[in-house]
Length: 113
Image (tube, rainbow, N blue to C red):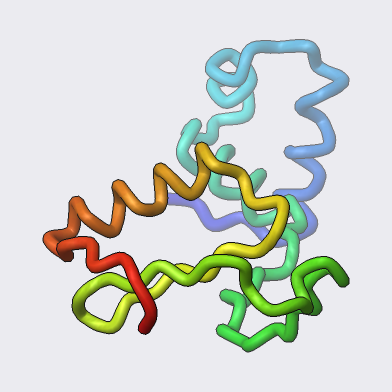
């Protein structure tokens, strides 16, 4: 097994694109394995910096002005779950929320909390 210097590897890789040859034929002509060719090519390709996973942070959300008023309705469910409805609520969305709460085994107990 022959070892190639960094300058030889760069020279071989630089000769590939102008050759217009298929990788198999090019490697055979240069006397190198395809595995070496691809390894060298990957080592020469700059990689983007690793992205660090996002850290969990709390973000303060300011609700629209209309939601700063007292809720119009408050629906209470067993287990301490409550749902406050403000003027202009979407009935379909509320219905799906109630269905989700009830489907988790909590019985609806409508009234004051």
